[in-house]
Image (cartoon, rainbow, N blue to C red; front, side, top):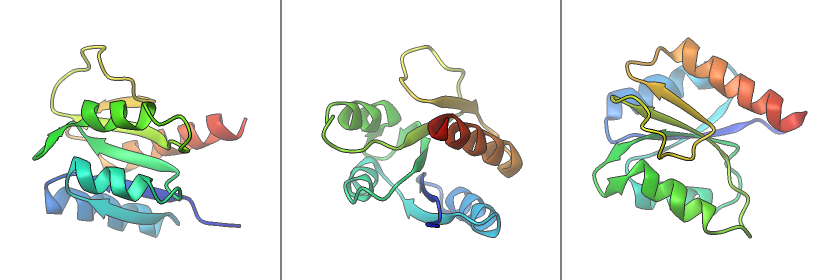
Length: 120
């Protein structure tokens, strides 16, 4: 069976690497991106199952990534978990929204929940 692929999008290297290391140890394949452009390029490959998306990125907002993905119905969109330092204002169409700081085990719980929901 193919491993679940998680794209971690964050402009802070320490944050990306912490989540990537933890999720890899939990059996996931991880890919990292630092900005909106890299995130959209990675999703374009069609192999991403879950995207962990920082809301504030150097070249835009996480909302920009979500809007771009939702505007391409022909492409398979991954489940999206937004991480932010601010409370959800209701304007983000993500599958889950977590307020930073987010412990890796809490992120894993959300990923597991979304994968279960997708397979049901």
